[in-house]
Image (cartoon, helix red, strand yellow):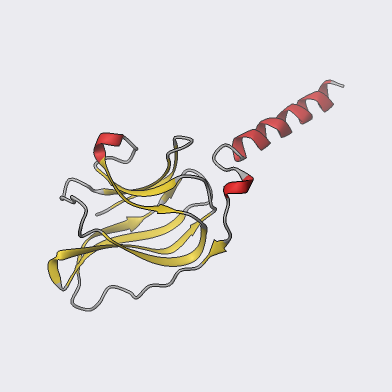
Length: 150
């Protein structure tokens, strides 16, 4: 009887933990978004591989200047992530989320499978102090993962 109780309890805990940052009605279909690679004349500022904490996040990022030195792009490539509610991509001064240390780049609305996605960072107040890319669920205060731009 104790063994059955413990198995049931562990199953409930596992279900709660894995569902902590998603609601079934908020999940969109998994999509693949393709974008062109940085051009030959682009100038890489930094890049790295994601460290995952939640939702199967994997892939890499590169921040680069393209053509005009003022034009900056953030590219996520070989990017994989299960969808979640209120998930955002940020440039950050640290590897953890803090409202005063981030620049929001975009909100992600679906899951991704081996995707390449490029975002314009030109209008953001970017400076070299922002050395990390975070994927973060604001609603549940859950860091999906981050990469350091080295």
